[in-house]
Image (cartoon, rainbow, N blue to C red; front, side):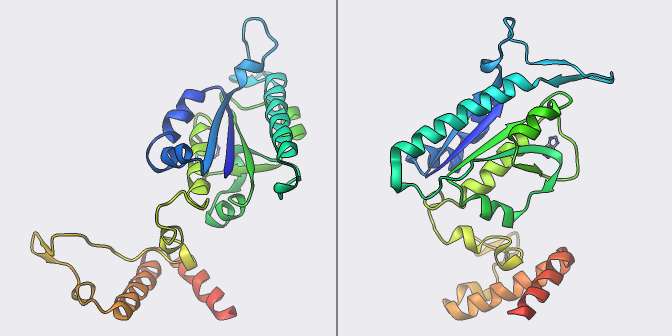
Length: 248
Ligand code: ADE
């Protein structure tokens, strides 16, 4: 069981995206839990304000430190209480990681997803507008992570992307325990091509070897396809595959 807490001004956006399909079913089954925490619920401003102008001038509004800090502390306290209640049964008593999604962070990748999937709890902090007051980031954030070199309007989509990539690695989330490991990026290789019925479609035949029933030959063919594809489409991954294989 892994718990995701997503701190955002747009909880409905996050929940709608993640309560669907495989991740939604995993949450229903209890393999994971996903909670969207509305930062606005924690503002002390009587008009519900959570943003203000930036000191020094410049475009746009900035999310203020207080509501972000209080929302984060409230979640951390709940996690601490739950961990204490479950006592010795929990392995992780360390600090809960708080991930701020920002184009300034390290770029997210599969190995990072694997590492984060080992955590019992994860807190994602989503900025909006021009960002968040630096002081609260310094106070609560443990990891700065980007999903790629482009700028989005907010951290919600990146938090959803990362939650999806991490959640599918949690045991029980995927029906077939194999599929998390056999898919693209296993061994650093891209996935081989796949086919379903019919055997011939618009004159194109399914490769003969897949109909042969010879499991060893099928596996051999798939590996060769993966290697060829990776070499052709992602020479960068191919180089890494070769050098990592060379060191084993
Ligand atoms: N917020 C805005 N753009 C982002 C990106 N590319 N990655 C993570 N967080 C973001």
